Length: 352
Image (cartoon, rainbow, N blue to C red; front, top):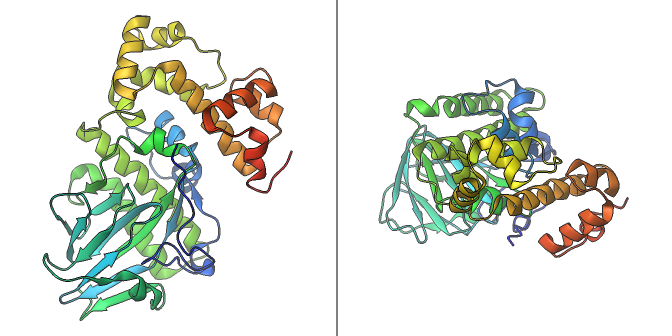
């Protein structure tokens, strides 16, 4: 089970090594939850919005914008493996991204974005073959939210990270490659470009609550990056792969929309308009587990999210996620996570 921890050196002003969070007065102390990102901003949901976005929202995704990077001339920076999912958006100029374990360098230009899904060391450079300097001192010396390196200002990028619920990687990220690159010039990236332009505007003009708004917009970016990856059809196995399967997707959406229903494989097969055996086989092939095993994991993630937020009593949470009693939820929760709901809640300084 994956347990992404806090950022290394995290505190009021720090993110991961080589990355510094914007001060609280500039970015807002509240992390942007995926459940708020699209609808609270009034953004157009796009063709794939709805249940799939709600599913992403309920695994506890939050975002943090970090210090931006401005560079010029010949430059190269070496970043330690980030403890959370890292993203960067190139707003001016171009660079080369090199990631440990990825055979070829990735060329990036203005408008491109990348998502570093796994905690791997990486470098950003003006061109291949340059010896990189450590990124941490450069970002620690940032002024007004911008780190600077090299000679000039022909390159500029935004950066940040996404943090997920404890089990969200199994639901969202395990099937993804180590790095996702989204070309900024593709027609499908129009909403991504819109979000980046809005972030630019918020950071430049600093209206009220600019930090909170930009973090919400960052989660919009995440959702659209995942959509674009899905549309490319190269997801291997997992929750995202299931959403691309015309047989599995209706069953997934039904469970996401109504997790408390007493679903059986027969019920889900009727939703998907296939036989039980067909659904069971396709679900396991696409998602990597059976439909009822997935339902249990989904219910436990929903329960864990509410426990982290101190949202409701044990009994009310049990009913909401499909368990008839507190003891039934407790047994399932401990079996899946290794911890009782009460012990899990106490880790966050809550008791009820």
